[in-house]
Image 1 (cartoon, rainbow, N blue to C red):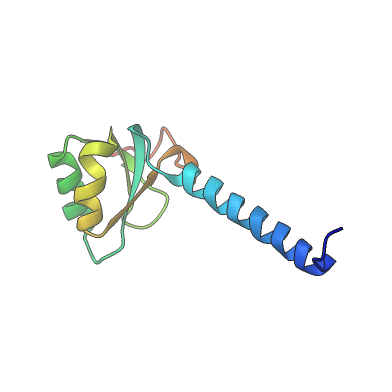
Image 2: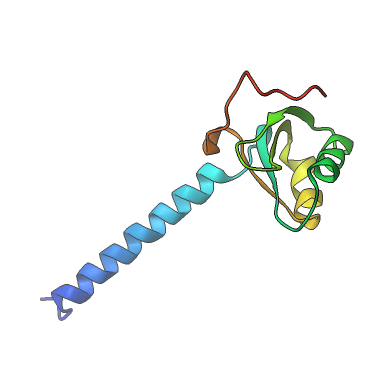
Length: 108
């Protein structure tokens, strides 16, 4: 027979469910090994500086992102993630954040 109070057990289940949802959210937003990624400057970096860094690391600009100063690029996580993170750029999976395709493309 369990000695736990029913409300304590309920809280434990809620915490486990919230933890699982957080993990799923992080996995969905993690940049792919190769593919489209959304770059968002968060440390005062200008869009031009961010794009120059991404291009120097082998990325191809696809289009403007859905947020101000954000850009969608195609590239590899291995070459982009560390340098962009050091430069204050948040790198997310492009498809997971509602990135549009087609109109709004930037000429590279």
